[in-house]
Image (cartoon, rainbow, N blue to C red; front, top):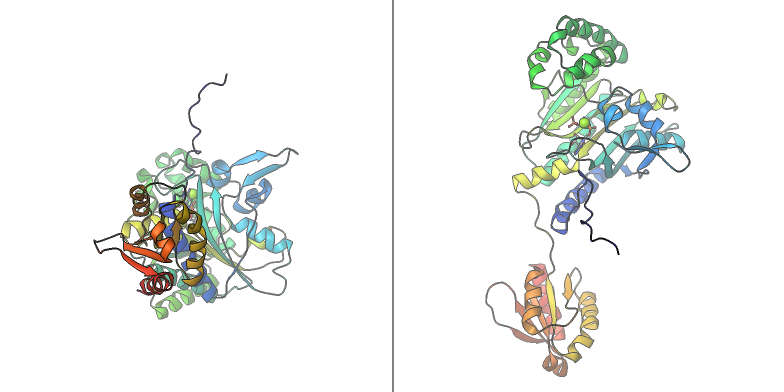
Length: 427
Ligand code: ATP
Ligand code: MG
């Protein structure tokens, strides 16, 4: 005999999105589609699984993601595969593979789950969702500005407040290499104040020390030499032009010299939208320029700019601000009392849905007393109960009663009921 066992639960850090929450998700997704379409971006969909090598090469071996966050396993053929921790690598791979970057520019977006084995906490999960946007073939600051303005428009459309824009420029690879030496000299002189992670990074990726979230190191990081003081001239000009465009468009920002981004392939512009309302996990959207990546992954040299938006954090903020929509419930619930009504209910439901565009109607299934059907009607969230009993069937009529307030039930012909429902839906 099999033993009764404990219920199987979801994997830690991987969340179900329940019916009461899907409304706000759909609202955000719809707003995103709308705004992206308004700028001429097209959707691309990539697999959730890629060869491990793709992420190792594109994200870089010495990053949090590749060092400790990837879900990597060997499949049945012994190939090493990884659940995508982010979308840029797969998007670039797809573009190269399908020749999407030959003599043309691309404006692309995608949406879906990403996987990182992090310590789950508020705003940080192991399966989370991103909207990713990538533009290829445009080297100037105009596309940087376009994407930042696009995110600002999205916030406006969603009614999102209390996010602010932070900007920085990382310069060219050469400028960063020179700065890297300066930084290594500075941190080496204070080696005893570095935590273990940062000591390791001093040899591998010292810029990432600036990104450390360890409070004990903040003073040291604050006093470190600034990249802005070591930028190459062209990057300075690029950054100034971007800032002028944002100023002209009236988008406020703060230049944050410590903004370096976690990923290796960024250069020149980096930006983040951050909020103080979500605790430590305050970055809602982050991105920047990554001109070197396409060539690095085997394509022709192609400038690129993109960002990723964390949906869980965005939605948590919308809920915190109270600007999320109420879940969409049924408009009406059809109560069926008696055998004849039960037989006719589903067909009547079809006629009503045909006749009243947009009507969300739940038809009672599984019988039940008048009282218990009204309880279900109430629980469905519907605004009105429609009642079909033996009498209504015999006379070709339909009862209608508001479920909120105490207005009385009225008896209408089917045509009148349809007219009434149309009218109620228009309000
Ligand atoms: P963090 O510094 O918070 O770890 P990151 O630099 O690793 O962020 P990106 O790789 O730039 O994040 O991802 C873009 C966005 O995706 C983040 O700004 C955030 O909104 C969201 N995000 C990243 N990791 C997670 C996660 N584990 N859970 C939920 N959202 C996440
Ligand atoms: Mg991270």
